[in-house]
Image (cartoon, rainbow, N blue to C red; front, side):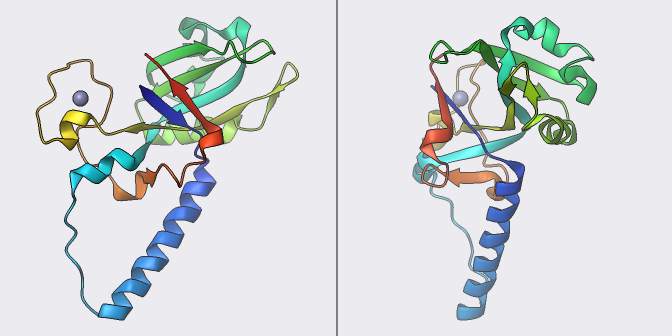
Length: 178
Ligand SMILES: [Zn+2]
């Protein structure tokens, strides 16, 4: 199961600032730098922001194919795209779809989010945000992953991109069953 959530770039910045302040305060208290030992079992609880992945909700269903969305008039204008996955949202009454757009470069993904989040298309607001993913169970168990198509994470990545499930509001998450 792949879980992708709304994380606004602004929220990420705020969170990182708060965390850095907290770390500063902790260092002041004990006066020493603590060595971080990562227990991978706890990684089950984390979701990791993919800064090259844009999740877009509210696209008109006419632009529902990845071929269309790849064009320069659409997401192509923001940079090189490596992958687009379009999802129809049967639960939504209005005629829109969501899409996951993977860019080659993080800067292009950010530019797309900043340009698109909050604009209105055909009477519906467009929401654009970074997508998140989770750690591969094999990685957590210290076992090599045998699935060449595995979409989950096999490396720790940047700690600043890691969020607990509690930190991500459940109401704004979209749970996809492959
Ligand atoms: Zn894996």
